[in-house]
Amino acid sequence: MSDSTFDRRDFLRVSAAAGALAAGLRVRPAGASPLPVPEFDLEEATVADLRRRMETGQDTAGDIVEKYLARIEAVDRGGPSINCIIEVNPDAVGIALRLDEERRAGKVRGPLHGIPVIIKDNIATADRMQTTAGSLALLGSKPPRDSHLARRLREAGAVIIAKTNLSEWANFRSTHSTSGWSGRGGLCRNPYALDRNTSGSSAGTGGATAANLAAVGIGTETDGSIVSPATCNGLVGIKPTVGLVSRTGIVPISHTQDTAGPMTRTVTDAAALLTAISGYDPEDAAMKGASVQGAGVDYTAFLKADGLKSVRIGVVREILMGYSTHADRVAEEAIQALKSLGAEIVDPTNFPAVVAKEIGEAEYEVMLYEYKADLAAYFAWLGVSAPVKSLKDVIAFNEANQDRELKYFGQEIMLMAEKKGPLTSPAYRNALAKCRRLSRTDGIDALMAKHKLDALFAPTGGPAGLSDLVNGDSGGGGSSTMAAVAGYPHITVPAGFAHGLPIGVSFFGRAWSEGQLIRIAYNFEQATTARQAPRFNPHAEL
Image 1 (cartoon, helix red, strand yellow):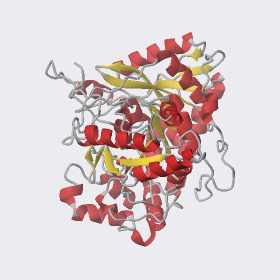
Image 2: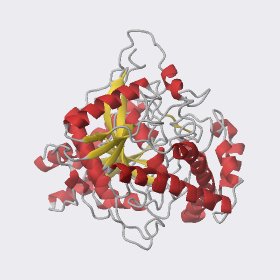
Image 3: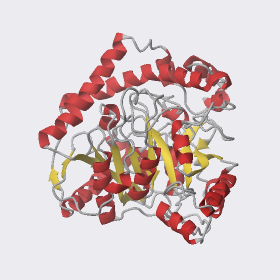
């Protein structure tokens, strides 16, 4: 769920890495043409489009699923071979046919009835698909039941047609990893430029959803792994408040930061998907002892193109801007669009210097402690079928299978986490308290109260860097950390391009403010219509 390791996605090193992404925009031979792909009559189809097809009889759910499966075969397996799908659900067509029978009988479960969805391969399903987090160490494990999220999707009538490739173990294995690579699935390729990275640990969901391999997708995030692949693949991504979407049955990193969320081509579809997957789960510690504030909310009710008059949005410039001229340009254009919609722009609104200086180190310490403990809890949830029982077992498996698991990068982060003590350790408790204070009390809450803001704004990140299995990911900046550490919501929306590579902008704010952020993002999206479907270029357009 972590977008990248500590020394690539944290406040302490953003400035030092500022030039690396620009350096990655290397000139390629002129005249490189997009790779041909078959025409697809569902390209850029929204949930509403697919629902109309089923309601009018133009297509059945079975027809739609078969079309997307053919698309996967043509684009993911063949043609551009973006390699973003790790496994197809062998029962997808049968599930769709049963949902067609329900529709004919007058039973429609909701807006997602018959809609194909893809989910990341760290989200457990008790079916014939694997749940491996991209690791060969978990092949053959059998979840005792669906994850709470998968169950919510099935209850809503969605068809889980495939699982997506990802950065192995949600990119919390090595300090020199290449995002989008897993031992089980290999390397994802960005559909906008095939030599570019899909970014983040939800890399496969980002590339596959952008390439129209399903109607909508689900990713997970600890810090950046929804919003970063969303911006690099021209998508809307919502990282919800921690506790809005259950984590039961999801391979973890950090119980204080982990969450799943929508990755879609439109804000409307993201709102519909968030409505379906949010809800109370007594097994999730983040939800125990209290009802979830966002549970039962229909987030599509916030889709009102009514302008943003009286909405106050603060621009965070220090640290969150200045690392990419391309991201800065797109952000400045977005600020003007927000002003034209009537928003009051407070510029700049910056976090205190101590917050930017100290939060990354504290976050990393918390994640190392929680990773060891939370993985053990997940393996216990798996029960007797778990091939590994602890982080120590995973490390040993990787050592015994170096030719398959460690051939490109190591497991330094796992080794650091294994050395940590229990969650009762003073060092852990102090780091967690520091994270809460810096990100919430002295961070987002203080900044928004000081300026009477409804949301904070920044570019989500720069354009996608080159995939490099020799040296690992290049450095870059991003806006994910403050909301991630706080456990607060964050939404990214497509806003522009640089050399044919998408760039998004972010809105984030207080806990449980998903509705307000969706309204802002929707108005921005409708005014700018920045998303364009990928063309499967071999290289960036230089």
